[in-house]
Length: 101
Image 1: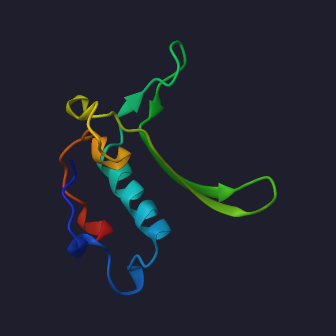
Image 2: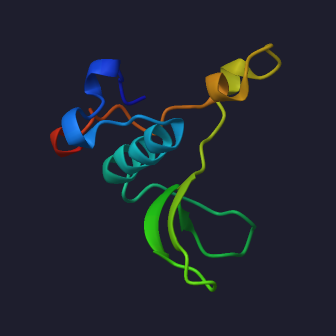
C-alpha cells in the first residue's frame, strides 16, 4: 500500500478540505503510482486501467472530474467483519509523489 499520513495531504491553497477532494487527490496519487496496472472487467473484453482519473464536459455541458479505482480484495480478509475499505489489497508500495503533496 502507498503509506499515508495526514501530513502528506496538500497544504495551503492546495489543501483538501472536503471528503470529495480527498477522494480525488487519493485517486490521482494512485493513478500516478500505478499507470500500467490493468484488469479485465468481463472475460473477452479489453483490459482497463485499475486507476482512472480525468476531467471533461458531459452531454449537458457540465464540467466533471471522474475518479475510478478498481482494487483487488485482500484474500486474508475474506469472511472477517471488516468494512469494505479495510479489505482492499495493495496496488504497490510506492510513496506519494512529492508533486502531489
